[in-house]
Picture 1 (cartoon, helix red, strand yellow):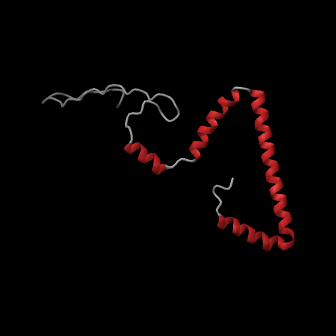
Picture 2: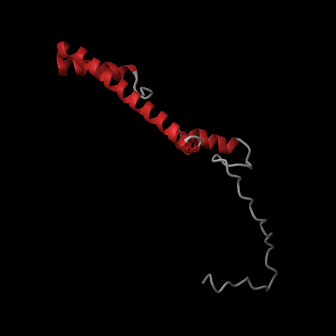
Picture 3: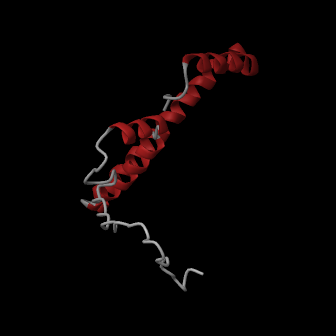
Length: 125
């Protein structure tokens, strides 16, 4: 929960709370906040366990896409570009587990002979 909050931010919150609430009410407010966070975690854990019991094995298949979404939240463009540039150029599977589509063979284009007219596509004009 506190992955993105550093010690400096916590210190600023404590000092602001000290000025706003005063030294008399700050300990009781911190205790109330701790109890509330603990209670919310217990509710979330209970809800997760209840879903797991009711859904059975389907719960795990539901969690997989959610974990994929969580990985997208930690997306690092610099790492993705580095991986794309310096690793295997032809992976057999995508990051989502599906195989990469095969590319159709490219027809070799030859230069036009002198006096030869270029191909004409009436649908393209």
